[in-house]
Each structure stands twice: as structure tokens, then as C-alpha cells.
Image (cartoon, rainbow, N blue to C red):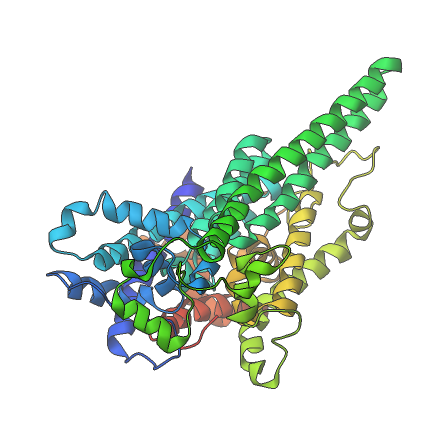
Length: 506
């Protein structure tokens, strides 16, 4: 209980500090004249709009403008379909319900900005709780779970967890779904993953967990029946396990993929068989489309060429045409600064895969499956980052790392991995506990980090928050600690400053 209290206290502090700093940076520095999506305002400002814009305007920059426009007007432009609908629906729902009484003082955009601050702060706290619970279950190490969750509270992707993006929503659903899956609640986990795929496209990758973890359980069941069952009973037991696995995999995959498929179908109907006219769209937004070359669905216009493809998926079309996404397309000399921005997160991903393979080469070759006669199976793993249950998470993290590096705008690798995988935080906590003498790791697992700090009346007490306790002693810390904390804290602050002023960031 004390662990959860310490984690939530620190997470709440970082949320309040993030909102305060983005407002400060947004007010202190002029916005950079970036070539970003900036739709014109189509509402008359009301009494409190200027105050809300001053407080939360920094949350609306870059891709957040897409989410806000979708929440306000729906999907108008073709490239808006790169942003999935769940987060805008939540924002609009809050603006139309709890914040509806403010309609006389705040325009819809003002209420949406307030919704961003409230929704993402709440969702981030939920993702913190989910990550801590998942870490406890998988690694079976309370100190490692505590430290990795505290590091998550100062995640390098912080600005995207705070601003009008779907990252906090996706992280809460993904970590929560993984926890449910680890506890054996497969149906609930499928529902969480399904909802996550309505928030971000990479929610489909979570299908891998659904296919792998039940398969591991099924194999353990077959081994059990092999040792205790005989004759026809053994055969029927095998068939029952295999049928349950196939049914779970088929239904689970369908449930998870359904929101993605439904959204692509909605995009197809919107642009390939349009029924709407331009009369419903404010002239200022039509003028922006003409200036920038944005496509708007119009019943009087011919359908776009991608509608003629055998598999007309609007999402892949947008990624290629509007963002130039594809294999090795980002490997240009002028993109070297963006590769450098992504280098720390990529380094953590590589170190996690290398450390795990080096410690468990045979386990990796067996695809994470323990030997039948092993007394240290998945039910009682060795505590820590290197135990067998972490295998699938390291594989997942490595897949994201390779795909993000080779096929995406590499600077987004930081938020891509930090909101989809717990591994960057697990490996960071693992390295700190191995290399930082001030943490005094003991053989027994305990949540109290043994770092003595001055208390009242000259006494010393044990800190419940090793991250806060280490910062005043940073000069005494090991190079590993300085590198990890320096990376997390610098990106935490710099992201707020850069993003709030339309400067390029991760």
C-alpha cells in the first residue's frame, strides 16, 4: 500500500509540474513559425477562452491540433484519419457533459483544452498504477517494480503524455491489458487491447501477447496432462487444450482487430463513396484545404486513387503520401539530428535485448519456453528483469525498436516505445540497481530503497522514492545513474519547452 501511495504521489506531482511548466514555457517564449497543421478558429472566443489558452495552449500544438479538430468538427480532411477516434471521442464527451455548464464562458475549443488537461492527467495516473501492477506480477521484484514505475513518472515521452495526444490513453489500456492477461483474465485483456486499437494503430501489435501467453499456458497444461493422464483421457485432454487455444486466439484476434478494421471501413465510406457536401464545413476550413492541398470528402468530387486498390486502407495511404513513411525512407543525412534524438531510447532497447539474451541464451532459443523438467518454470520465475516471464516483453520491445528505426520517422521512437512497452523502464531500473552503490541492493526483495537521506533533528531515514533521493546526490552517483537520470529528466523538461513553442521534438 505504501508503494502505491509513493508512486501516485510522485505521479501527481509530475502531472502538476508538467502542466505548470508547459504554461510557463508557452508564455515565456514566442512560438516558432513551423510548418505544422494549424486550422483556423471558427468560433467566436468567449470570456474565459483567453485564460484557458494561456494556461493550456501549449497542449494544443503539433499533432494535438488534429485531435482537437476531430473532437470539434469530426473527420474533415483525409490526413485526419491518421489519428484514431477514441481519444477525440473522450474529449468531446467530457466537453459536452461535465464541462457543459461552462458553455456560456468557454467555447468548444476552450472546453476541449480543459478536457485534455483533465483526461490525460487522469489517464496517466491510471497507466502508472497499471504499470506498477504489471511490473510486480512479471518481475516478482518489489524494488524493481517500484523503481521502474517511478522512472515512468518522469518518462522521456512526458510531453506527449500531457499534451493533446492519445499516448496516456494507449499506455493505460496497454499496461492494464497486459496485467489482466498475466493474471489469466483473457476476455478482459482482449477488451482492453481492443479499446487500445481504437486509440492507436500499434494496438494491433498486442495481438502477439494474446497469441503467446495463452500458448505458454497451453504447453504447460499439455506437460501436466502428459505426466498425470493416461490413455484416451490424455488424448481428449490434449484436444481440449488445443481447441481452447485456437478458439481463444481466433476470437481474441478478431476482437482486438475489430476497431481498427471498422475505422478503416469508415474512412473508405467517407472518401470512396462520399455522401456529404461542402456546405456543412465552415469556409475558413475549406480555404485551408485549398491552400494546403488537403483532400475533403465531397459527393461531387471523384474518389481518390487509393480507393481502387485491392485492399483500400486509408491509414497506409496517409502514412506514405502525407508523412513519407516506409522502409529506409528516413535514412537521409539531413535526418541525423532526429536519429540522435532517438538514440537514447534505441540504446535502452538494444541493451535490454542484449542483456536478456546474454543471461538466457538457451531460453531465447526455446522462444521463452522452460524445459519440462525445470523446477523454475513460469509459475515461479527468478525475481528480476532476467526471469523467463520477461522474454515476450523483450521480444515485443525489440520488434518495436526495429520497425520504428527502419520504417518510421525515427524521432517518434521515444514515445512509440515508452507508451507501448514497459521494457525501457524495466531495463533502466535494472541497470540502476546493478550499478548504483547508493541503492544498496540486497538479496531479499524489499520496496524500501536503502538510500539514507537527512531527516528531522539530524536523524536519517530510508527514502520511499529513490529517484527523488538520488537527485541531490547526483555528483556521487555512478556514470550509469547519471546517464539514465540525465536522459529522463532532460527529455522530461526539454520536451515541454520545445513542444509548447512549436519547436521540433520527438
